Amino acid sequence: MNIKYKLISLFFRQKTKAECHEVLLTNNTYYQNLSEKNKYTFQIRTLLFLWTTNFSSDSGFSINQKMKIIISSAFVQITFGLKTDTLEKFNDIFVTPRAYSYKNNPAIFDGDVNPNTKKINMSWPAIAQGFEIADDGLNLSIHEFGHCLIFENASRSYLSRIFNENDFDHWKKHAANKFQKIKSKDNKVLRDYAGTNLIELFSVSLETFFEQPEYFENNEPKLYFSMTKLLKQDPRNKLNPTGK
Ligand SMILES: [Zn+2]
Image (cartoon, rainbow, N blue to C red; front, side, top):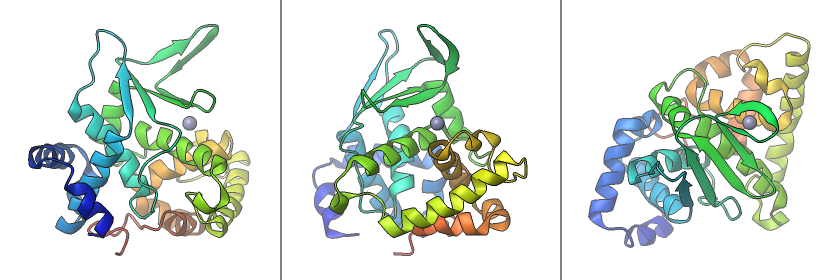
């Protein structure tokens, strides 16, 4: 494990780490499949993310440590190959007990990220289902954190960007290609919602990348490998996705 996480791990009590391990082991398939060494790094990154994030909920609905660990694990999963291990701007997660809607808007949401208020809203049943069914290409937390990464990457200064500029351009090129395929109804692999815009295409790609990597690679290899490069990991290698 790198020295940074060794040091950070000293700040967390043994009991906290053991609880984190237990929750991840019973709820996160990606974690279950990791080598012991990777599991430990994953645990520390999960606790670090959790510790730097404010979780809140409606009165009458309480969000416990287990829920926080499960939500945080989605962020750790996406960024496991990257240096970025926390968010600087999107530090508030609001969890609702059910799907919700906004005033003057008939649409019902399971999750959304507001780039103005920097708030992430998600409904707990949809979060939980995202992890319970780990191979259907649907994971709300991964989806919403995907939006945060795009927004934050754009707002950070050149040197502290989350994504390597060339890798991101490379991804955009293949994403634009895929976008055209969806528009001309020649779409496999990603659900059609990805055709909304490139931001949605990124999040839907992430969900499929982690939940159906073999299927993704078989059918859209160029887009798939542009993502392994961008995220510096290949989820088909379950023991050691980052190859480190
Ligand atoms: Zn979205």
